[in-house]
Image (cartoon, rainbow, N blue to C red; front, side, top):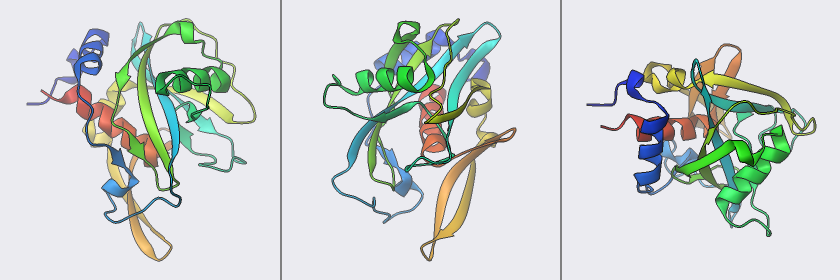
Length: 205
């Protein structure tokens, strides 16, 4: 039997993330067998999956990317980006990118663990780092990369009735992807796929 949504609090999340074994990996090809990334080798990247410990309940912090970016323009995403040579691992990349993109200082983030790595069609090998964020904290988005920063109740994602599968024709083939529409926000693709992974981890009995 899966975990009761109401029982998922910060202690439950810490226990699950600090003790879990990583899976075999996930990616855009999960719903599209045979799909290959557009480039090889893959580009290492990391994102922060920020779980904000609000008094009224846990939330997930997300960003909306600006429309002029080369990769994933205008999409809803976690803060993150490519690994740099000076980064000391994926956690460092996720924390650095979060601070650069949204101004959230690493002193307010407690890294808890990682979700399964995620391979995107666009050629990124992404490590999702889950971090517990303690308010208050400043939010100062980088105007070049981030159009908006917002939060969604964690309970919304934990409710699997909010997980949808959509499709569209791309390069002559039907492609499938996860979608989690929330108010005016269209959360889809890799971000939605990582959220499905997060829910799987937290809801396992």
